[in-house]
Image (tube, one colour):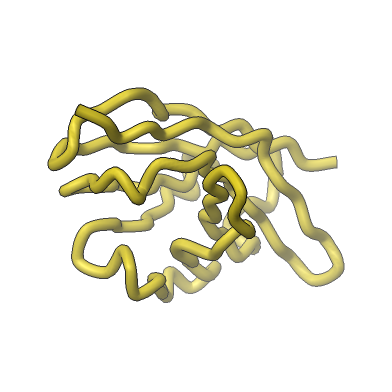
Length: 115
């Protein structure tokens, strides 16, 4: 069983920045494709960004140019750098790890953007 633990969320002002972290327990972390999702109250969970085991990245249109996903395989950690935050970015952000039939989720970390 793989455990994913997100951290780094909090309350920030519009235009501010945060760096979210997702620490994984997997010994083969480097083989997993990783992703960040978010879910705002009353809305469906949406895919924000992905990074494959080969470090190929993709982003939702709403976050392109503002969010950056990265990974440090030596630390078994994936990051989401979020800049120029907007109120509509407010959501619980979830880390996801996929490898073949394996699919794991973290518990989420709250990001609130408000003045």
